[in-house]
Image (cartoon, rainbow, N blue to C red; front, side, top):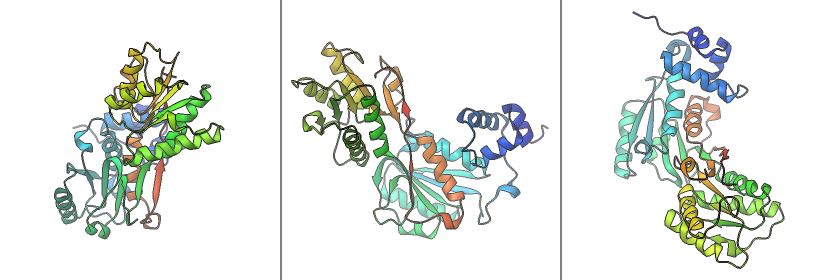
Length: 332
């Protein structure tokens, strides 16, 4: 019978010190390079390492379980890394994630809350596919709860959110720094929270660069490829065509690519394009689509980190923003 893997065996497998392994699995690794952290987690997964429960358990822990309620994330490969991030940090802290995929059904959500409360889980994560306001059962107020990619209009629960405004700003800045001044925005739908924040970031970047706002360069009627195609055609029909296009998501960028191809325009020689979300298809487009990464993995990890924190740090109305990294490919 093989012996239980230890922190020393993980360190040897990853080629790092035991101190480094301890910092990573205890989520105190901000100063450690991302590549090193990933080596440690690979070693943890390969060896099946689990910390000593008596050394790692929270003082308030009773069941070593965390409930994870989501609308459709568990059935989506795209956003599934939210679960991976939460699961890895839970496992490293000797906790099991209990996942319920509700499909957005309010009745199933309430039943899930009741079931997880009956099981006396140590905390609950509620995660949404797209950033949105949510109305959750008041019973969640009786236990540690954190929202992911969602927020409570009454500020009763803390939230872990992607910093969409900063992402919109960074995407626009990338185009400005590449020399573009006429930047079109394929905006999307006004009722979508993430889109509104990305628009605010776009406006801030233009103002900071001294570029005047021009309504002609903003199209607010697209969220899917067909809208991206339609809006690109409209923008490129302007007398002063934009030299760059910021697509509110990668689906819109796909339609944008098709429209530019039909017009005989080259990316990025004639028109630069940037997307948002880093959908799995973004790297398969030709040229590869430069885009903003939605930090699904980090959102999941930070939710568990929040639940593992001290009660004093768990302010009910706290809102934590996670940056969206720029993924550079060949479209700028």
